[in-house]
Image (cartoon, rainbow, N blue to C red):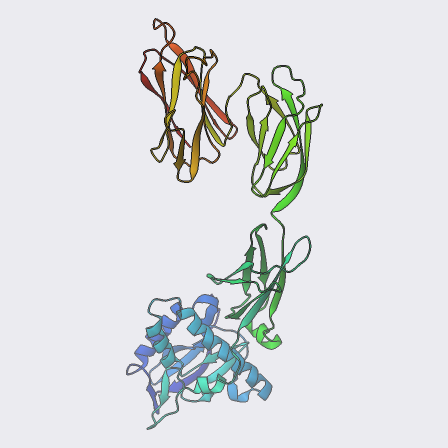
Amino acid sequence: MITPTNRQVLASTTLAGLRPVFGTGFGETARRFQMLKTLLTPYNCYVLFAEPLATEEQIRWQTELSGEVIPYADLSPERQERTKALLRYYVDAAYELIKNYQDNEDLGRMLDSCLEIPDYANIFLVGKRPVLVGWGFLRRDFNPPRGLIRKLTQRLPPPRLMVNVKLVDGLTRVPLANVRVTLQYENQTRSLQTNAEGNVSFQDIFPFDFPHFLIEASADEYRRATTAITLDRTIADLIDTGFVPLITVLSLQPSIWEQTIQFRIIDKKTQRPLSKADVRVTTSVTEQRRQSSSEGLVTFPAVPIREEESVVVYVTHTGYADERIEIPVKTTEHTIELDSSGLQGKRGAFNINLRWETIDDLDLIVTDPADNIIYYQNREADCFGCKGVLDIDANAKDDNLTDQPQENIYWEQVYPGAYRIEVLCYKRRTSTDVDIPFTILTIHGNDRFAITSTIRQEGERTLVNIVEI
């Protein structure tokens, strides 16, 4: 807002020979000025209209602006052209601002009537701003001239800005096509896609003083990039210099880079290196497989990794439990311990493992979020595109018993939700005088959680846990 110390009087007019476009007299004009002041407050656009102040026989038109006051007719031809350009701008700005209101059509008609003036003598230049007096009035002629402001400025080019953006690869500097570019300005957002040359042009942007633009670009396989453009100039300055296109270049850095990762595979108990371990590295864009050397080392050169993702590592070795770990991006060295007495069965993104130490036949039963039941009679189930598999079923047959049995269910991809875990004592082979201890181990990524419990009677089925993923 302008904070004036003194108002300048531009002109005083009598109502003789004039008739209001709206209402029957001064009162409606005063009311409409207050409305204009409210609607056009941003960037002080309301000062296009001089403030009317009634006296006994006339209206005094005053302004909050400071600076030299010059009637339009007294300006040099060059300054008249500049004033017409300024007038065109501030009239357009008034219409632009009322677009934000729900009743903008009615407000537009109201603005049309306010922009009527009796003649061009009602235009003044105050400092760098045009100001209208006698607005909202016409001559009392039979057919008074209308639309004088429009007629004065209609041949001038509309005051608009253009923002041109070029997108290039941050490493190769090659132009990037089909990149989504977003421009934010004055609470408005526009989006376009770059052409084959990596260019995009935002046109017909209505500017205000000291325009500030926020530009953002995003594309697959690249990091999001932003930049800002601010012009430290008023519209009056821009009209003097011309509305030249604003040009900027945005470099998108690849969100996938190559990284060398080395693993050391050792025996968990002896801490000795393990050779010929099969190591598989998986990211969202690659899968690579190698074997460990006699020193237990395996190196993966130039692994493509996407920003903000984990690297999944699978390790298998004869005589050892499979291992699956997730390591964060930018990890270059990692030691993996294999356990000869560890988890049996395949490792996935999510595992549920049952372990006990008798020759009895226990069964692992899991109900997934889709209400599928996975157990020995239904070994695979699809849960909204994520398949669960029971791959280890121990002590089911009397001729193949072990006192170190395990059962295992895994999901390569896990669907979020509740997983209900139960254990069934299907066949009791040992004395029923004592309970059968067992352990349920859940593994999700690198997180492990174990629960121990007991079961005794053949046919008994017990709920162990409900896991939320």
